[in-house]
Length: 387
Ligand code: AMP
Image 1: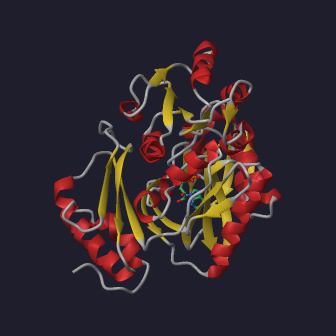
Image 2: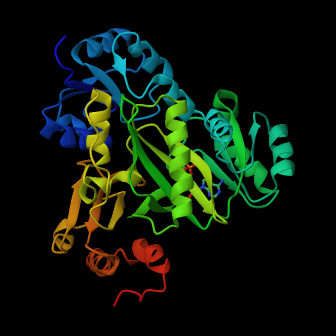
C-alpha cells in the first residue's frame, strides 16, 4: 500500500476549508462529503453531495480516501461507524458519539475527575418541575443532542419560566431527551485546544479565553491570561480525556473557571472556532496538526508566536478594506452568504506584546464600528479604554 495522502472530510464548512488550506502545503489531497450541494469548502476540493445515510455514496467516498475525518460533529455516529468498517476514521466514532450527547459527555467528564455544573435529565414536563426543585434557579434547559452555538437552550430565571422553556424545547424531549443544568456564575470561559497523534504524542496549544454573545463565540484571546494552576488542570483533563477516548486528531475542551477551578462544559471532537487564532498566531495551526495527526505524520510545534485576538464575524462580513490597514491583521472570509446568526468569517490580530495587541484591537474596532464586540476584552484588565 502506498503512503496515505487523501483525507476525506465529512462536512464541508469553514473548518474543512481551513483544513484544506493548511493541508495543501504538505501535498495532502482532500475530498468532501456534505449534505449540501455547494458547501463553502467545495471551492477548494472535490465535493460529493449525499445524505449521511446513503450507503452507496458513503462506499464511493470511502474508496477514494485513505482516512476520513469530520468538520461537523453531528454527522450521525452510525455513519461514522459504518465508514470505519471500510476506511480508517479519526477521531474514532466513539469519541463522536460521546460528544454528540450532553449526558454521555458530562458523565465521562465526571468519570475522569472533571467536575461539571450540576445537571439532571428531563424527559417529561413533570421531570422538568422535579429538576427545577432539585437544581434550583437560574438554570439552563438544553437538548441532549444537536445543540450548538446556544441553539437548543432555554434559560430559566423564575419558576414561571418552566412553561415557556417546555414550549420551546418540550418537543425535543421525546426525540432526543433534555438536561437541566445549573447556571454557573463563572469568572471566565476558557478552552484547551489539544491534539493527539496516532502514536499517542499529545500536545496542547496555550489556553484560549473566550467571550460569547447570544451563545455564539464572539471574541477569543490567546494565550489566556490565567494562572499556571488553571492551565495545569485544563491540560491534565484534556490529556486524560484524549487517552480515555484513544483520540486521534484535534479537539477542544470548553471550560468554565470559577473559584480557581475548572468545570467541564463541553468537548468538540474536531478543530474548533476558539482555535482559529492558531492559523495565524501559532507555529503550527490546529488545522495542520489535525491533518498531520489523522495521517500519522509527526505533529508540529503548538507554541504561540505572541498574543492573538480573534474577532468572529457573525451574520455578515464587515468592510475588509477598513481593517486591512491594521498591521498583522489576518482576514478570513468563508465565502458564505449572509444570514443572521451564521458564522461567515473571522479576523485574527497578532502582535508582539499585549499592549500592542490592545492598541491594534482598538484600531480594528474603530475602523469597523465593533467597539461593543471588543469591550469584554478591554474590561478584563484595568488597561485604559480605547482612545
Ligand atoms: P454550550 O452550547 O453548552 O457551549 O453553551 C453556549 C454558551 O452558553 C457557553 O459558552 C456559555 O457562555 C453559556 N452557558 C452554557 N451553559 C452554561 C451554564 N451552565 N452556566 C452558565 N453559562 C452557560
